[in-house]
Image (cartoon, rainbow, N blue to C red; front, side, top):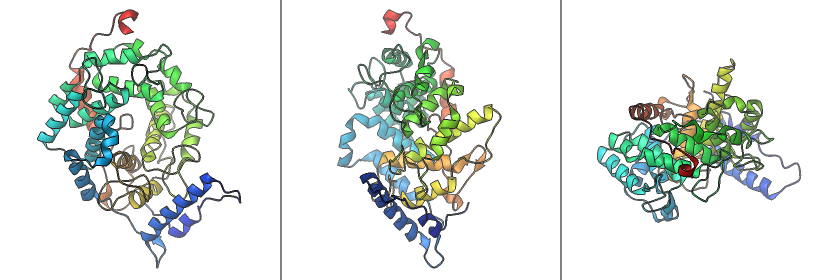
Length: 406
């Protein structure tokens, strides 16, 4: 794959049209930081970018160290502890690295302590169960992939938990008495399908129609009807409809138009919404929507021949601008490394590198990461193994009437 010449990148600088705003100033400041990174990575005599390298060993060490001890900055994520487990395990799996058995056992037993006796997982031991942390815990346990990890999930109580969060219009609260948005539907569907508890079609009655009502005039999806389209919500909405086999309800042309215009011309990375700055995490939230659209187009007999976004420009941004030299990945130049961006930036790199059965690799072979399943953001082999494991058990019984369900 060809790198963009530095001289061509510069030509894509943002034009304020003589009407500067706070937003345009922030955009220009970000572009300056990005251009500095690209210039440093270029051969100044030839004005061409040099092939960047994925610092796999540095990232591996950063992630492994994080399983033993986290800095005090992570205290603010006390209610997100299953997320930390997921971000670490998934990022390692994309680098082709497995935790040793003792670490797998310790993590599975810790996640078991986060599970509520009434179903679902909280942000830490004894905390209120929440759909987002349940999603993260289930994903982490599936990645661990041991029988002990699978058996942590109390599938009967999990199903009861999902029923308690379900709303009559098909949406799901994130926790009992909490907000209902498109994340809830996606998390519930991802959890239920991975853990093998989607036996009752009534659980997701009206969910597809509610999700479709979140697609905006721009083409992307908002958190709930009437709000602004956003990359994270768009992924959740589209993935939910694909799991429900209702992707035909999407206005795919409007969605595709919105998505392609979210790739920034100068940076090469994606923004999350109109006028938002580029961010490494949106390489997954926006990028993973493309493979889902490819499946929709394939069903309609219009299989794309290549990625419908610039894979090389995205990989340039992630490798040149989003790597911390000491390990870990970042939002954009000038930001600190963290586990969230390490996970989702590597996930976006995976999406960019894998197109159907082809490899779209920028740089040498050592830059390649493992594929990720675009519906779950877990490696496909981990997904298959979990589905096979849970398929050998009977479905847990759903509540039999509305009294039990509520």
